[in-house]
Image (tube, rainbow, N blue to C red; front, side):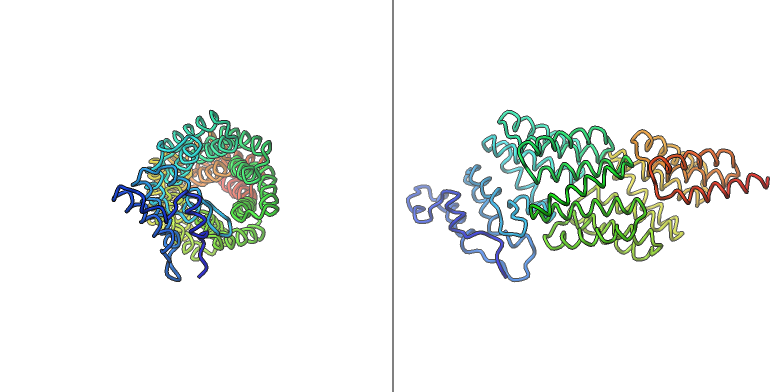
Length: 456
């Protein structure tokens, strides 16, 4: 098996460690630690078919020995050294790509605020990214604001842009899309100015996701297409996976399942090739939703279960919440409403714990639909009305339209046809304004309500 590690001699030179001079170190404990660093870098060899983490075990052990020495800058230099992978990631970024969040938390906590500012900005930003993945947005925002202050003081434009972009990701995750777009636009402007192609791609990806949430599909497609072009021109495989996944999601929401599946398979293939776990989760989610839209509920459930398992393994709370909600929707489609309710209840609890307003609204909407099927109409109305208000405030037309359809169906069950027709008309208006794919369903619902009203 080919190693993904650069030659040990090159790394030792980069760390300014000369194995031949170790005997001159007078302190026995210090000499022992440096000898361990050299041995881990030069002698460790993973077995064939080892797990991803074992491929870099030698570097990780060397990092911890450097920390025991208090050689914080050397430890951080090792952490920021590039591997010989397809994407040429730095060690800590590769661990993030693989989804080793627990290991990253331990690593970052050892060096943060102990290294020179130029490195500390990188570590603070990385900690913010880590806590975003783990679902603690308050802590993530704090770290990104710290990294932003450090990089602004140092004049590190690339670091400033990265912090702004990561703040944009967080605010989109909690449903503040206008603020998210503002941060991503600031990031894009900086990245364009300094010709940071990867930064431009990340900013375009963030903008695309925010525009999708706001129902601005044409803008979202433009952003993801630009990102894909940039990523292809610069051989940025992770960027290509992100862009393909973004395009797949937009086409899915527009009801174009063929294009959604095509881009989904592209993104999923690249993600698996480079070990990009979050990209794999995103691709599996889109694939599951394509099958759900095609009424292949069993296959969709199998994919959602895979997503939940991976999300739990890498401790991605937001993805766990999304997977649980998707399972709730799938079981509702299958008519197993008690099972659906349990998944949705767990999803809502995660969204509450994360202060994820958008996730709470989506869960409440689906809970209301399930409660309607269970003939618990008062509770259903409470959930659906709360969800409709929240989604309107968030500016999420797709979710709002789905909720309005749920309210119309609820009042149809209650034989309150005029109220049902009002909600149906509001949903039709949203579909026409944003080009939402459930337009035909609303037209059919309106026809049914007109017939029911006329037969009274």
